[in-house]
Amino acid sequence: MTPERKIPDRRGRKARRTRDTLAQAAFELVLDRGLRNVTVEEIAEAADVDRRTFSRYFTSKEAAALDSLRGDGDRINAARRARRASALPISEATSPPALFPIRRTTG
Image 1 (cartoon, rainbow, N blue to C red):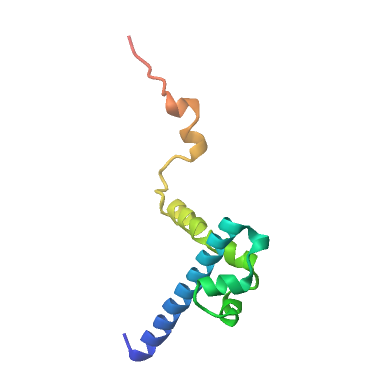
Image 2 (cartoon, rainbow, N blue to C red):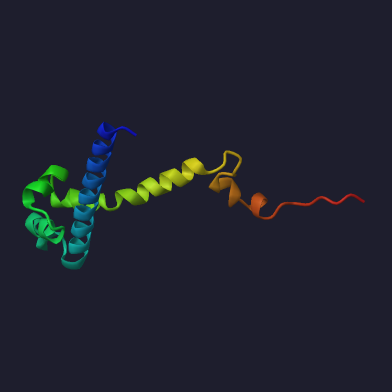
């Protein structure tokens, strides 16, 4: 990897960590005290950044608090994509014929 390529990767990782830290702080504060009782300044302070840094990543405290849930959706979607194509859809896997296959006996 060239030196020019390493710098943006490092910046990107640092930006992702800052965003994740802000989102986690917002989520925890909102869960603890409620949305109306939390300010952007308090979220920024909990993440050890200033308000201006907060504004670089999020437009509101609501957006920051909900951002921590983004990872859950990403993980669910990745798991669905990784599922084998031959797997039965949930609707078929839970239908009575799939749960209790009929075995025919000859004789």
